[in-house]
Image (cartoon, rainbow, N blue to C red):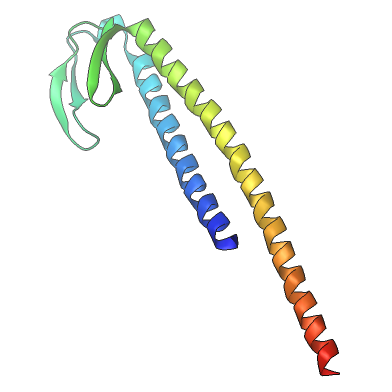
Length: 134
């Protein structure tokens, strides 16, 4: 049971870290959106196709951007709507992180109780063995 709880804590901690990384990526997206101004039109830039592949491009309309809404679907949105969407995503991930942190904390407390009970049983068994030996 102790090992199972330790494994669960490890999985939950990895998931928590992944959520924090996603929140960081959305924060970077928000910073990039905040840099887009009307004077950016016709400016050349590198457009990310994947995390490691960029292609040259130009900003055609500084008031419209493509937003990845999940599973590879891109949706054209106005700049304020895109910022609103990203803010909402950051908030949702933050809420999920808080809930997950509470679950991890509860599992760690459970692990402490399990360890304490396990250690008490070992001590009791050792004491009983010592009494029988004498």
